[in-house]
Image 1 (cartoon, rainbow, N blue to C red):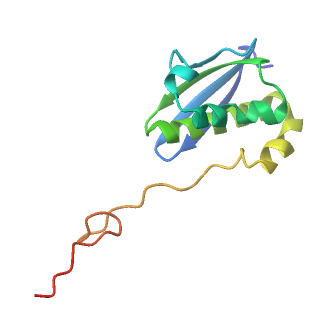
Image 2 (image 1 turned 30 degrees about the vertical axis):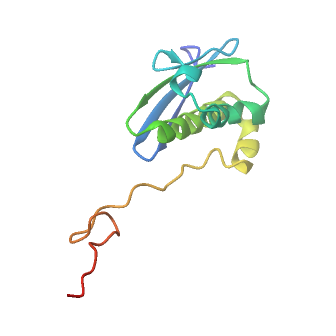
Length: 131
């Protein structure tokens, strides 16, 4: 264990960044000072966040403290998930193959495409008029 008694992992997705700390404990989960159920009300988000713990069978063994900035709810949820997976690898290196196989250690590179000149968005063009 680190000298501060926690393991840290950083996760990113779209414009979101999450700094996650794992402490030995009984499974308390806070995101920016609120419980994760309060912060992410949709069940899909909650399941996604807990996925790394379910795969490694460590649910309820660590308290999680996450600070998230930028982006929207979906990006923040995936950033936390990546941060948790990276922190769990620091806890025990034997979790790496399990998490890698599930795709939890891979940062999702997809991001919003830039707007091009003459278009309304990245690819949407103004309506064509013949006459």
